[in-house]
Length: 135
Ligand SMILES: [Zn+2]
Image (cartoon, rainbow, N blue to C red; front, top):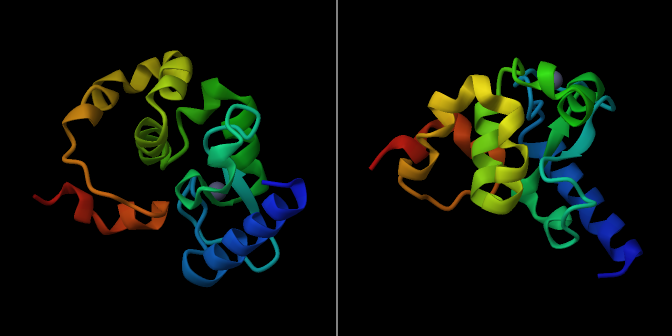
């Protein structure tokens, strides 16, 4: 995909989230109009392919986004970090293993990820419905 095409895809995804799930992927609180960044869970530098996958993205407050990207010792306290890590686990177990060390405090929860019955999800908002926990 060309750079321009990627930018177009990302602005489409951002518009979709603004319309459908205007909540911060990291803290769960509402994003006011014009305030959200489109954040990537798996870094864009790690995977070109995943940068335009909707499940790898979400709206985020600039501050929450910054904590997630740059302050792993604080990121452990982001309210939706378990869901974020679960999505990363679904998208790329290799990348998940690279970052899992930063989240040792959450290891009990993280250990359960492989036993969550797999259900295809398209975007992080679906985790809020808890449907994925049902058989
Ligand atoms: Zn937030």
